[in-house]
Image 1 (cartoon, helix red, strand yellow):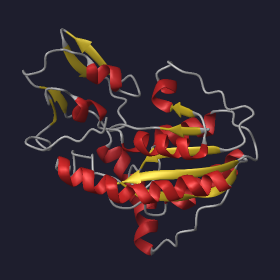
Image 2 (image 1 turned 45 degrees about the vertical axis):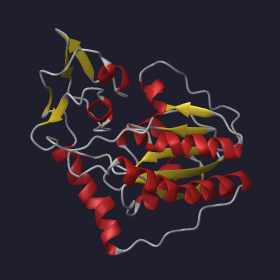
Image 3 (image 1 turned 180 degrees about the horizontal axis):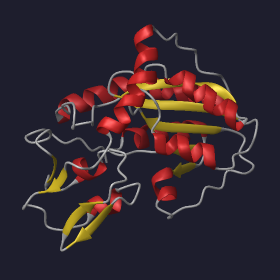
Image 4 (image 1 turned 135 degrees about the vertical axis):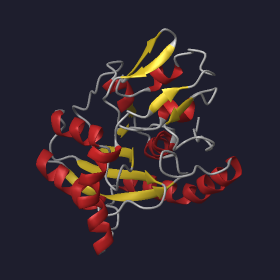
Amino acid sequence: MVIYFSGTGNSRYAAKKIASACEDTLLNLTEVFRGEARAETAGESRLVFVTPTYAWRIPKSVARWIEETPLPGGVPTWFVMTCGSEIGNADRYNRELCEKKGLRYMGTTQIVMPENYITMFKAPTQSEAMRIIERAEPFIRKAGEAIARGSAFPAKKAGLLDKAYSGVVNQVFYPLSVNDKAYFAKDSCNGCGKCAKLCPLSNIALENGKPRWLGNCTQCMACICACPREAIEYGKKTVGKRRYYLK
C-alpha cells in the first residue's frame, strides 16, 4: 500500500506514479484525517509512505498517525519524501519510527519538487515548475522500481548540518513558525469554501462566507496555494508571491 499526504500536490503526484509502478493501492491520509476514508492496512505485504518534507522531517501529523495506528508488524516499509531542496537527516527519524512500530525499515529517498512553502520562500514560475518536475521523473521512477523489486533505498550519509536541520532546527521551527495566526482572507474572497474542503486537519471553518482558521494548522499550504482567487494571505509574507498547486 502506498500511503501519502500532500498539501499542494507534489507528494500526491509522486505517490500515484509509485503506486502505478508497484501495482499497489493508494491511501490518501487527508481523507483519513478528515474521517472520509478508513485505513485498512491489515494483510498488506509492504508499506510506502510518500510525504512532503516539513523542517527536514516527515510532517508531525503523519508521524503521529503512524505511531497511533495499528500497522502490520514486520512488513517492509519505505519513505519517499518530496522537498524543495533536501531532507536533512530525516532517515534517522524514519528509521527510529519504524523500530518503534516493529516495521522493517527499507530506507528513505528524496524527490526534489517545486517549492510550495510561500510563507518563507518563492514558488517557481509555471515553466520553472514543469522543468523541476521533469527532472524529478527519473528519481520517482527509480524509487518505484526499487520498491517493486523489494530493494532498500541506498543509505544517505548525514553531515553535521543535516543532523542540525532535522534535530534542533526542527524542534525550534514548529513552535515558532507552524501556526495559522497570520492567515486572513482578502475582500476578493467569494466564500467558495475550497480552502475548508482541502484542509487536511479540518482547521478552517466558514463564517459569514469567509474562512476562519481554528488553531490546528500544519502549514501544508493547501488553502493559500489552491485558492482560485488568490484571496488568502499569510500576513505580509505572501503578498505578491506566486502560488504553486499541482493538480
